[in-house]
Image 1 (tube, helix red, strand yellow):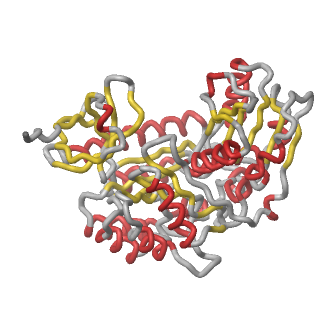
Image 2: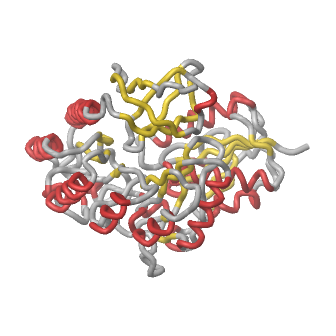
Length: 434
């Protein structure tokens, strides 16, 4: 009888692409993928180290897995597994912990899936992780997350990702195009390019991210291509100009900022200042006024004074952007920032976060309001609550309509009508002509 396997993924789009790929590998080995609640023989939990309380989240998911099957073999993979393997091994019910390289050979470690008294840890040194493993998600959502790059050489003072994923490395253009064609053949209409530092694609091979975009723009049958995130210092004029004229790349950029204070940016060891960031936003909006621009920002970084925070708030308030992803700074072991003395009290971090979340809501509403009455193409999602289905316009406005199974994974031109309290836009469908 074939063993069953269930997955749980924490964190970023990159993790989702890798979980999906590992799932296909195990399926080829004879495993049957089942829902998390079905009581699988094997549970694989893909963890994240960026979000706070990684240990608590991991413990909670392990406990939930064992509630569905007390004899399940529990394997932990992902960034947290690479950073804190011994800590994870002590979580009751965990049987196997795999590091950054080992997770892609997971089937080799599942030859004996009987519960263990002591968890087995397989984790190599991150400096020795040099191999690139291609990944993409398929079958889970309307969109596919296509990994094109892994690791990071930047070592920002707050970040553990280089310690969890190793040096920057990437796929070849030829192989990414091959995978994109496989995704398109499966019926998926939108591909989201993902990586740790996506714009660093090809830095070791002589290829460039710009070259990759040009190649993917020619993939027959690909309706939409979206860039998940790109550093402002790697977002060149030629990339912006190409997106503006592209057949498939949608008008949506997510560009990490982290702080609107140049003093804090330097302390974070970011590779740009606000002047460059402003120029990137202005360039985008000059060519694509309808483009959606999202921003990552961290509040409460060590030494961030009230005036520094106000610099960030005022900078963002005056910038033509569409939404914010707000992160409250949390201490990370083995980072330079963790050694800084001037820690910001938690209540001040929380207050600053609240202010930026409110600003983000205002920015998003203002962006949405500009397109009420306009007609835009929407790709409808698989997920629904039985009555309502959701989708995204090309420029990332989230819309809703009564659930219609015929619309799933279809791109339809709709008129945007009204924004509700949950920041969802209702739409009017075009009239049917008989």
